[in-house]
Amino acid sequence: MSEHAQAAATMEPLFNPLSPEFICDPYPHYERLRRTDPVHITAHGMYLASRHAEVSLVLRDKRFGKDFVERSKRRYGSKIMEEPIFRSMSHWMLQQDPPDHTRLRGLVVKAFTARRVEDMRPRIQEVVDQTIDRVAERGHMDLIEDFAFRLPVTIICDMLGIPEEHREAFYTGSRDGGRILDPVPLTPAEIAQGNAGNLMAQMYFQQLFELRRKNPGDDLTTQLVQAEEDGSKLSTEELTANIILLFGAGHETTVNLIGNGLLALHRNPDQLALLKANPALIVNAIEEFLRYDSSVQLTGRVALEDIDGLADKNIPKGETVLCLLGSANRDPAVYPDRPDRLDITRQNVRPLSFGGGIHFCLGAQLARIEAEIAISTLLRRLPELRLDDAENPEWRPTFVLRGLKRLPASW
Ligand code: HEM
Image (cartoon, rainbow, N blue to C red; front, side, top):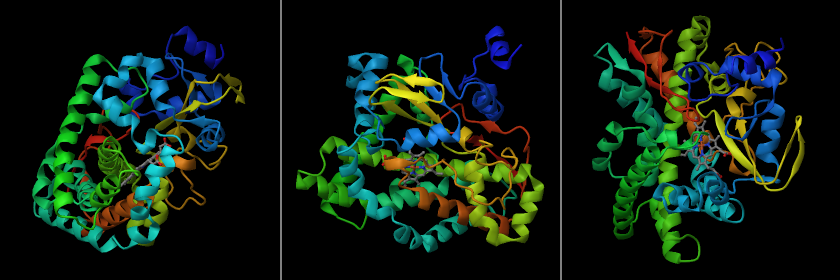
């Protein structure tokens, strides 16, 4: 029996992103998708691209866009846009098409240029050192909560001008929002939870806007509040939504780059030893961590016109194509030398983990530098550090955002 027929016979779906087994290790499933059905129609009627060629094309081709409002209405009915979380997301630059996307991205892009981010190195180093100072005597920590999480939160708080005395709540707050991004229908309870989180964030950021109107600073919030006051550049809803996006995107992903990278290194002791012996390999190692176990696994686009021949499928206008970034990153057509192996010396690593095309991640360079400084400083300052259980880590139950709940380590 062919593998396709076998899967059908056992009724096991090729793509079941919330099954614990899939979350734990999606890669054998990706391999099967790429090999047997590279543009697969999911149980929810979406087209799932798993090869590098199609993923890369869909992200960059202008015949695809976000079409967020219409897409959401098609899936949930027109009342969905009355839900605060959906209203808010509809204003994210991440969910917008040109010309609104171009306008919103243009307002913040300067804060993320390679030069500006390079200038942040000393501050990033300081935060990493302080984080290690807090735990060095203990001999034990959770690498997620005590280490990986604190850096990106602190840096995005700096960038948004969030005062020091407000930050503790962000370090200790719950991180349950990720489910809203997953490519399966949300239950009313999940939408209600999304609304509650969104309303809390709106309340906080409105206070911050007041503060920055009275006391302008050299930060992104001040910059956007001023653009909003100007009237023509940004509406109040867009201001709030995009600050929430920047805050979330600024840490939920980078924490997992650091966490997944540290896990991959400790599961491959030869690579860990190699990096310790050659610290300069860290820059290439970060690209390899991004490729090997991406902290964002998937993003989507909508066909803005009928598309013929995406692999063996025709995509009718209005249909959603899900792009499996984590699968494209292990496609042997692009990485012929054992793509399932972690190899920090691999050449020509160009992961799709930051997306591609007009939505290419705004924070890519920032995330790279944060991870580079975090991981290399940890290896240098706590060289004896070992994971308590590298073989059975606890994954968060979300699919788009791939990361660990905790990663206990001792030294
Ligand atoms: C490892 C860390 C990160 C990963 C893997 C990641 C991944 C991504 C991906 C895949 C996209 C594009 C989604 C699409 O095409 O639909 C994206 C967009 C975006 N990212 Fe990141 N991101 C990371 C870190 C950051 C950081 C640190 C920030 C900000 C401080 C950030 C802000 C954004 C924003 C604002 C967008 C939307 C850009 C647009 O729509 O034009 N990201 N990110």
